[in-house]
Length: 190
Length: 190
Image: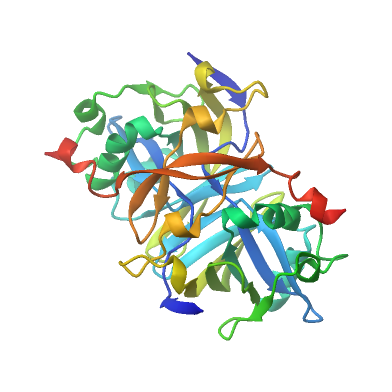
């Protein structure tokens, strides 16, 4: 029996992405965002939605660029912190002792200690309501060699990204392997 | 040391959402999509990006509505299947013996056997490139009572959603609890 929960932003899994930007003065900032995801394969694009009240919103409008930094479970405290305080009043890099690295491709910083980074140029700005959606073209992905699989792609079991649960407001790790995509369903198709 | 992987759609975690629609003739269809995520809190909205070549694309253009059905790990084979074959030539409900239920709120069907459902009305259609992004307003969320937590929200450990890994093309389960959001980072802020 299904119960109606009302009009809520409850969809699982949601990501916990850390958005890296520079402000007008060139101070690097990071904030955590969950209203985000890949939105196009060609050009490769990722969308992230922010409230106008966030410091990062103004930074992206100004610099037309951002990075998406994928946190590992070992950085769950820092990731949560990045979503609690504003960069307007805090230098989140120095408080957490993480290291900003200047992207050579886009006008934004990324976090040296995070193992998987997407460098993005702002392509579209979509006004939806409380949130504005920024669609950024992914111009490069950078990964620590230590997290790469034999395929050349980052291994999710090494990256250990954080899963955010909206509504319930919890973080979880990635769990057991369930199967190969575009493969485990083939037996049904035959 | 970071390695450049090029411009790729690699961001972890990605969801595996099953999109439910009706075609012109009223045949219910489902397809799996990973380029998706919540994109606004008010109005509550979820975005899903599809290629024009998909059967679901035409259905959403026609019906201005869709459902997002959150698969559990027990349905990983069916979920993969829904992303492999087209609804143009297949009745995916009858092949998988899953049951379409007509939404009373939007012009789309949902999957009875899935425990978490979002019913969406099309709000915006954004042309990005290979993919078109459909932004839908979530008019209701329905969940099986068996997956609800005491908070009234679905418990991710009971829903057991599937995590998709782009590039590497694998499915994983949700793993261990890492902490409470908007809480575990507070000790850094103090």
